[in-house]
Every structure is written in structure tokens, then in C-alpha cells.
Image (cartoon, rainbow, N blue to C red; front, side):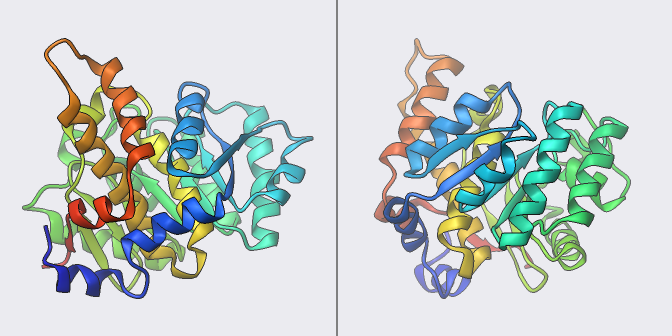
Length: 289
């Protein structure tokens, strides 16, 4: 873990614990238009971290719903023409209101529809955070990338050896889009155009369940709504919180437990997480050295 002085400098002016406390204090209402595979887990993850979820993709409904929420999460995991239209209307409303919009470009690069839809939202609306794996980010950036559907390709995995180059790439994407970029995987990177940090929390078991990334995008919506004035710090805190919860869940695993138990323990980990635990266990350092 980064020493306390280094971690404090990376997180100023808003500390990890303060970000989490703001979510629990303000109970932000988060509008999620997400995929139907993981929608229930996303809602429960938001409740676990202290936020309040609302899920609506009906075009006749989404503008009113977005209008009463603090942030909007767009997850393209199970696209259809109806949800795309609902996303457009919700994104336009959130942009008009200046609300944080989190884009999760699930499977970008796997199909023309996914890539074109993600690019449309990125270019046409006020996207403030992009959260995805490295393959998805490369596809959005127009860089050469392989794809394994919704999973990161092995050659795109962020490692200690390519961390500096991956951080530089994240900063370039942030500079081009104006969004905070969160590239998540074995090592997570959060960057704006000025700075990139690496977060080394989590467990390999998080890849054994469907939805851990979707849940992270959802809770990022909560942290962004509660900490909009310090958006990069809010995103760092959300990513660290999910990673620490994953570590707590993995530690609870017993000989008879499988991925179903891990999923439950992960939600429990988010629910029981407090500021002191987050500050103690978050492993945050510069990604540029």
C-alpha cells in the first residue's frame, strides 16, 4: 500500500473516507440503464454502499426519472433499439442538467452496434466518467484491440510491466474525451488528463461472477453524484471501495463456498465497508512511475 503521505497527496482535496461518507450521508439517487443480466446486482450494490437505485429504460419514462436523480449510468451490455433510444433521451436530459454520466462500454469492439453506440454517447453527450476494461477502452479510442466479447483480451491486460504505458494511454483518452477514465482489471487505473493512479485492490474471484464490473459502474454513479466537485477522487474511491470489498469477500470464503457465496460476500463487503477500513486497506499509488 502507498504510505500515508503519498496516498494523501494522491487523494487531495477529498479523502477516501470522506467520499464514502458523502455517499452514505446524501443517499444519492442513481438512474441506471443497465443490462438485464446484472440489473439486480447493480441495484443491490448501490443499496449496499448507501445509495438509492432506480432502473428505467422506457423512452417515455427516462427523462422524468433522470430529472430527479443525481447521476446517470449507461451500460451497453444488452443493447436493443428500445434501450438505445431510452439512453439517448436520458443522456440528453442529464447533460442538460449537468449531472454526472457514467458510460460502461461493455463489449465495445465485439460488434459494430456496441462500438457505434458507445462512440455516439461519448461524442454526443456530456459523459463524465468512462469505466471499462482495457480492450473496451482501446476500441473506443480507435486503437488496435482484440476482443473476447465482454472480457478483456489477454494481450490487453494491465500488468506491472506495461503499467506506465497503460497509464499514459488512459490520460490520453481522458484528454480527448474530457472524462475521468477508469480502466479496471487486475490493476486498476483511474486518470484524468493530468494524472493517473494505480489501484491494486480486489480478488481474482471477482472474475468468477458476472456483474462485478457492472456493479462498479453503478456505485461509481453514486460516488460521482456525492462528490461531483472532486470527480477524479470520487472515482478513485469507488474503484478502491469495490476492490477492498472483493478482498473482504475472498477472505470469507470457506472450503464449501463457490462463486455464488462470493457474490453474496461481495455485497456484504460493500455494505459493511466504512471509511476507516477503506483508508486502511486501499492500495493506491502513482501509475506513471
